[in-house]
Length: 153
Image (cartoon, helix red, strand yellow):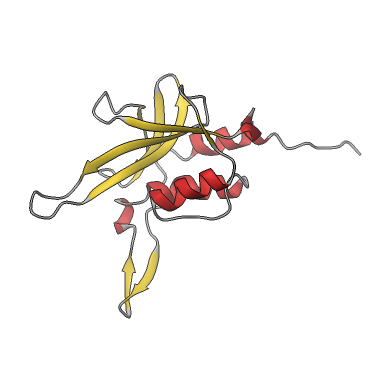
């Protein structure tokens, strides 16, 4: 019988790219004040859920997270390092952006994957699904950190 050796990086990149247009991560329910609530708001706030779920499947972090802060903390605890230029499969962290109003700001960091050729994939707040886009959102959103895991070398 032939030995089968899983190819981590190739499988990881394939899963990321094959996630395009998925709404798989749009809904996550919890009880808040004894009421059922969709805390990812039907796909508006699903970026960390998407990224951390893929990373957890490949044992590249320890848990699934619903916040960017929790995901980044887990990245750092799991051996991810900051790099200067993105590599295919690296994690991109974008600056905060205001999705609220002047009187009621709702600022969020955003997280996604770099997939090469100046493209990234992340949850689209507007489309409420996973979408491919320019890695800088056409220079509208600054990348503040790029993370890499040596297991992907």
